[in-house]
Length: 285
Image (tube, rainbow, N blue to C red):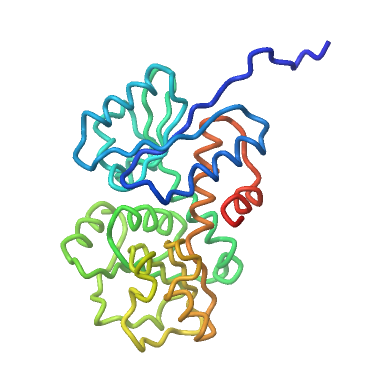
């Protein structure tokens, strides 16, 4: 008799909180992860209006009761859910945002896999080229929730980060959240991108349906040494990425980060690390 046989294998109830959720790729990704790891489970969408605190509280009560194994969190609730958590992981606390929720020792834990997910994907492209540099310079476009995760990941990895945004007060709020690091702020109109090894767009500019827009000013020349990372993944090739490649630069969209943050959350919930290539296939079919 096989001693590893489990007559009652666990069933993983997973899901996503956010609004709106109509175009989310998460159900495809996590269903593929469950199948690839031979696990039983499902993944549901939980659209909750931006100001519906009671809706958030009611849904999270199902996690506390063990009826939901784990939840992803996306816009606009990454900060809204914090008040309902019993604990935040150091990463989530430093970033000030939660994208992964689970129950441990009867405590509701808020985590953030956006930062390690971004860094893991970024290193597939730039680590070899920049690892020997004494000073690595990154320019982050935007100062919202995604920017906070990206900035946290970069400074922890030793990058010097400059913030640029159209909303100065938002940028100042972000830099004040990281008092142990020097984070210069520059205006978009004063950009000198040739001094940067990495440019990361964390804004939604260029996202479907506004696919003909770029977060960078027209005719802005970039250094041939600058790597472009656009967090937008719909469309797969944004105008920013397309323009960069036209100039002969290396660039990528945000699908890799989406896959990585999802895989890390899945591993937290289930203890299983899903094969990344299967997850990519699930959204490219």
